[in-house]
Image 1 (cartoon, rainbow, N blue to C red):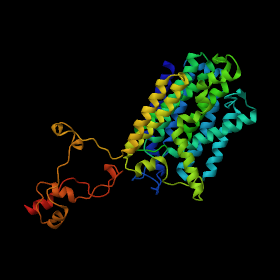
Image 2 (image 1 turned 90 degrees about the vertical axis):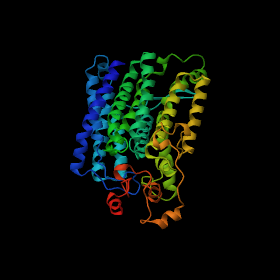
Image 3 (image 1 turned 90 degrees about the horizontal axis):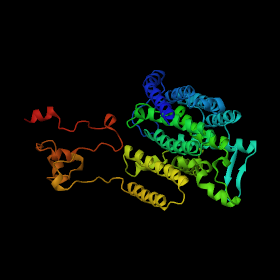
Image 4 (image 1 turned 120 degrees about the horizontal axis):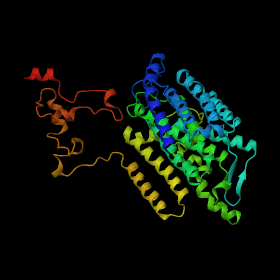
Length: 447
């Protein structure tokens, strides 16, 4: 575990330290596209954050190769090289897209080629557990097609959800954390050395996201762009594919009795393998809904719009930060709920816990404008935002008739006349009056 944590920390540190220079490079090269109709931010923000994330990946693999306990991963398996090859290709296409806006079909073709490069080097799905049938070995063509489809779906799911500051990096980090615990359990709990590559990939992916998040949280100073979102999507898919390509189901020692009983007993353990997309269920649901929505309107499935889940959260009244935290909550609930079920499938407490947390999540969704107010006896000790507002001194009509000639010494009437700042805009880019106090020059003229 210490070697994995060291690799994670080195990856995070390299990504964090390189993101600042990459931001300056993106500004110098003009990788700051104009604000589009579907964008949420209000100021042009540089992209190319994926450059720092890719070098973080390289640093993590390099450090792991020199650690005694992780060096065997590179000696006994070709999967780290396969991952680096596919990641380099998809990262290069993403960098070009961040700068020149490539066509969607070109990016789709690059995603399929990247998956094919990994398959050619041994990173592929070899078997699947099917209830009532048992473990089914796949032919090379079946494994290749399934691997390519999984990689493409995961990349686009992460790319689609990258619409708010810190959203994609945070959700992928949560998914990687859940998958790291799952793979580490197979490696350490069942002493399966073949699960070590997937554990390493998940640890490096967590480091990449954690190192980039401080620069990407709202208000973001840099975006990861397609060079980052497609990269982390490919690594997340490669982690799940690695286990199905290396781990022998018989090594788990849970196949006892008939074939049906054995499959039933093994199914909870295999859930993260059979359905690896459950750890990114939220972006995958967003991807499916976007394809259905666009094709229903007669548009291309790759046409951009403002109908994603995070856009809907903003429309119903959630702030930027709250929308991101709600997406984090649901991602963590699904990912770690699936992980807990794979460990203790017969525990009723897990089901009850998931139901209770789901109810809490629904309450958060249905109360977008809820702001708790402190009781009157605590008004003097709580922050101003939680205090009860004082009633207006005069009606709005009277305040309007007073206009500029009426006194505004107490500041309450002026506060009622002031136009509110548009919702969802941070203070650095607010449109309208920036000052919260009356104009000093006018106040002096009245005196």
